[in-house]
Image 1 (tube, one colour):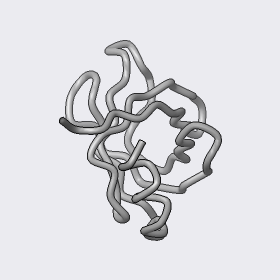
Image 2 (tube, rainbow, N blue to C red):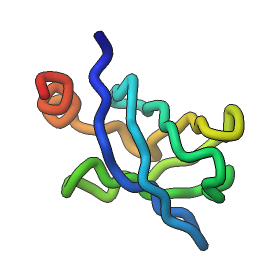
Image 3 (cartoon, rainbow, N blue to C red):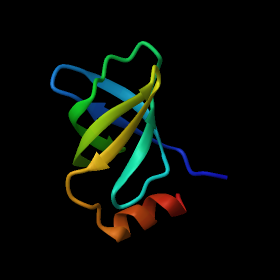
Image 4 (spheres, one colour):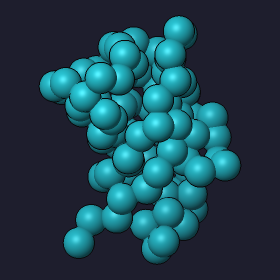
Length: 84
């Protein structure tokens, strides 16, 4: 079963509560409410109280985004969240 994390994605003009999946050092997938206005481009991601992680977002559909981190996340952080 995949670990789902909760966080916040902050864009230039919008902020959204997100569900984070497939967290890896290079990026992750985000799920938002369908009405979320976070758009493609530069964003910051907070995973709980940890962050910000600067990333580039690409919208996959109305409620899903793919994030690619500007700098890889330290493997210890990724492992911490994978263990729950």
